[in-house]
Amino acid sequence: MMESMRIADIESHIDHELVSKQQIEDLIQKTAVRISKDYQGKDLMMVAVLKGAFNTLAAISQAVTIPVQIEFMSISSYPGQKTTVSNGDITVRMDLGCDVRGRHILIVEDIIDSGYTLHWLVNELKSRGAASVEVFALLDKTVRHEVEVDVKYPGYTIPDEFVVGFGLDYDEQYRNLDSIAVLKSDEYLTQEQNQGESA
Image 1 (cartoon, rainbow, N blue to C red):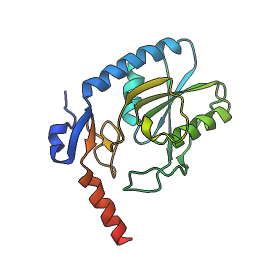
Image 2 (spheres, rainbow, N blue to C red):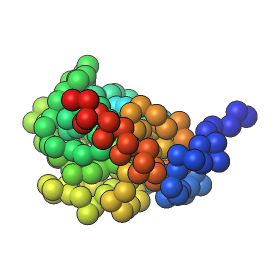
Image 3 (spheres, rainbow, N blue to C red):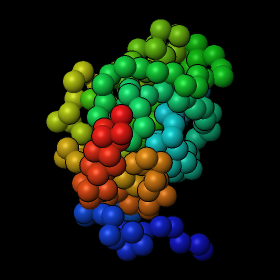
Image 4 (cartoon, helix red, strand yellow):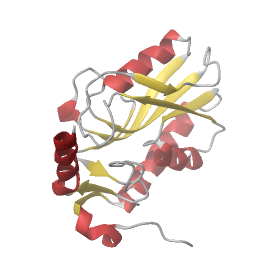
């Protein structure tokens, strides 16, 4: 079996590991059991928010024991590349290619930050006529919530630190790390300062 990128491979970039590969796998398995039971006999569609939630969607969809339809959206509340702060402005980059009316939707999220993106998405899918809209989030920065979000399948609550791995990136890097880790601040602060100076 091929090995994925580990903390040891990029140790100089990482401050510390926050959620291990084993912890992720344990959470996915426990959550999959609940989802399989809750949606037994229902027409379930999993919707992942790209790019970050791709790993989480792949893991949870393979762990459930019921048929699911998989769909993707690309939406963002981040003002641009190379920034770690969300401003709440929603941009739809890629919409769903199917009708959700009458469908049971499970939104698969990698991380909840301010909550703006998720709050908007839940309301948007409900407005399109979905029978139900629930959320599974691998990670949740509850201290940063600026709007109320209801997560039926919660993952790990994490502190207000910039994390990468298992789909989460900084400047499109580190998504392939097999665990969740805190990026050293000089990895992103230096780039943001340089970007500001050149603007």
